[in-house]
Length: 203
Image (cartoon, rainbow, N blue to C red; front, top):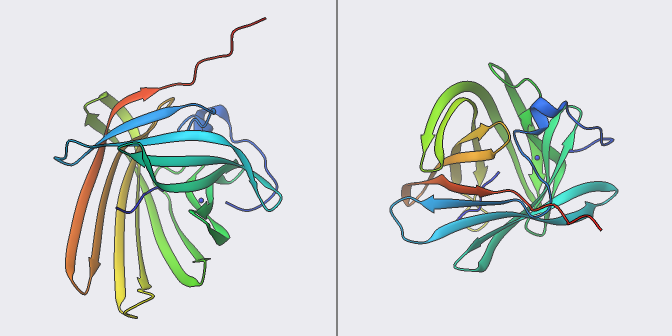
């Protein structure tokens, strides 16, 4: 399974709260997603603060059946929300996957993940999204597509994603499609519950 999710580089400056709240990354926040028709659940957690180079990031961890299946380092900067690292691979330059005031915008990112060069086209719309966790009005839906060379076969792989974000919740739906020499594969994650981190009791 490709842990999505699905980017960042520059001097850290916070977004206005209305934008930053589309990806609340307080340490301990946890999102539980249903994986298509499977019984397993995909759990996405803001694990801890950690630097990538000199950049302060939040380490996000993905688990299925309690086993970690992926991770990302994400930071919120003045120009949007960026991914600095996927697993152990540093992204150069970091990828902006959610822009401030992204609604209706299109943008392109060119980058390398480890030794793999790639580029991705992004666009954003506003839609009402219905998932098990609830009905969310005016969610920001970011669509992306990128094509890269498979490291083993040297064949083109096309990856498409549609990620829906709700204010004060974060990601509520993720739909993925990958086309390679073996065919096209699709899967969807829908939010079942969001558990915000508990505040430390005052002493």
